[in-house]
Image 1 (cartoon, rainbow, N blue to C red):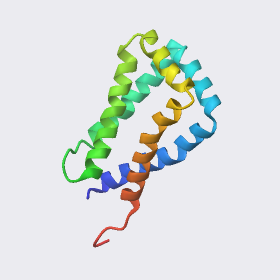
Image 2 (image 1 turned 90 degrees about the vertical axis):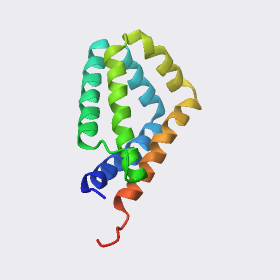
Image 3 (image 1 turned 120 degrees about the horizontal axis):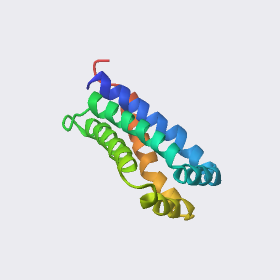
Length: 135
């Protein structure tokens, strides 16, 4: 296993399991922040540009589609971050604002949207920190 894969698994995994519960616990603040962000085109552009930079960094550092599930999941997360950033940069602000806000405001969909990312975080954290043979 590449040390880069282990590092990225730890980074992505810990981020997901530390940040997502906080978003869930502070649901109303998360919804308010999301609404403020989505209704501010200049701020949204800045966040989108940084999301593209983060996605590009992940894809350029780790673009491995073979070698096991951990490699593929880390690569897939990088590509999804890049695609999300590009969608926000390219689409007009009103195109996705109301859809995202309706998901945020729905009492069940909000948590349903957080769950896959949290589970990916648990998996990557486990894989990133589990003992390896010969270590």
